[in-house]
Image (cartoon, rainbow, N blue to C red; front, top):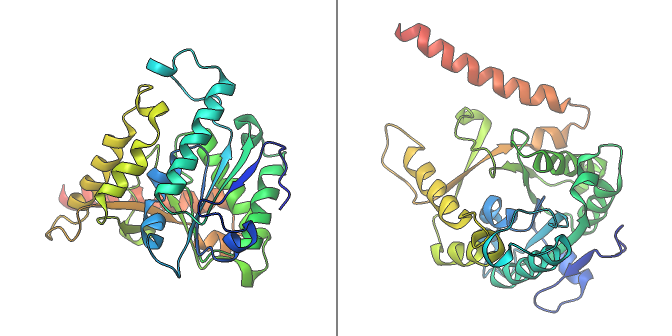
Length: 282
């Protein structure tokens, strides 16, 4: 498969051919940066782990060169960070037993520029070849510009596919904004209780981020535990780990649907729920 950037790569951990790795894929995560997949799409990794009939594939859209750094990595150049983060993501793909890990290797500025079609073009090619049943993307209310841009390019790519080749579900997942505020009818609650050791291992692989000053490992596992407990106020816990996702499937099923209006409707339902409760209890 020919991808846009000369530095792009498709890594297959178990040594299978790229063609077979694409063909066996059932779940695919599309993330802006190295380590985002392990934070936002662990549900998909877990669904496929140690299962011969399900395979998770990861796609990282940007090159990771602009990440913050400290400690051991303080003096690393952007190019050195690109190499470190790609190496870490390969390790995660091995630990998580991914079908494949694609590195599209675009600069973040290109992903955020809606006039540049190359990121969506590459994603379209990967989706058309793999035809995953379930896709995990960033959510549209994330507060990181590159994350939202990545989600928009993912939606654009999926909309280009023939209807029969589109996934049956597409989730917009949490990283830089929690989704507990979404009404229950608007969000998917994804159980990620199992294999806490695997969760820790996958998050811990990204030493350049953790040692570099961000404890994503502790924060991510803490958020999953908190969601599990605060999921229902009048019921006992049914899981020990949970992530929330925005259901993006309606935007894929109807390519004419306005994305901004789709998000506004969710925000309006949340606002109505809050104000109605205040009025009722005043």
